Length: 171
Ligand SMILES: [Zn+2]
Image (cartoon, rainbow, N blue to C red; front, top):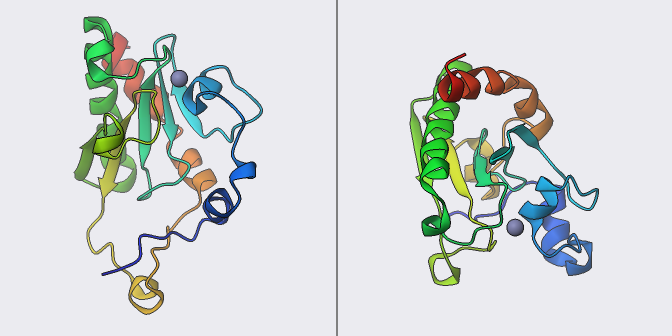
């Protein structure tokens, strides 16, 4: 019904001009390595995982959790990583409840091209879902407009370390 297009200038550029895409083998490994080639909205990391805001968010607070090791499949994660992924996800959702007063989420991953996966490096999406998401501009302009910038979201989610580290290490 509505175009799945977002008012995000750099996404438009990304689609229209492939040469503007970062020239790296793996965009998530580039974030791990803090490459200047990629725009990075990382909000938390330890030696095993990184949490970053999605550069092309589906919703405010849309984040990705991914292992620092390049792994293509969920089944490639070891038991420690699987447990840590679960705990980070739980903590991130708790934080979104506290910051945005949101209780509904989509959480998951697309593994492989046939499933809609676009990046080979395993990553899990966490997408908060707000009540009454469709707003005036959605209806009139058939576009979806994010209600805050990634910079604002990043600032609002500055308590992420507190939530994740309390979950992981009990501190
Ligand atoms: Zn990678």
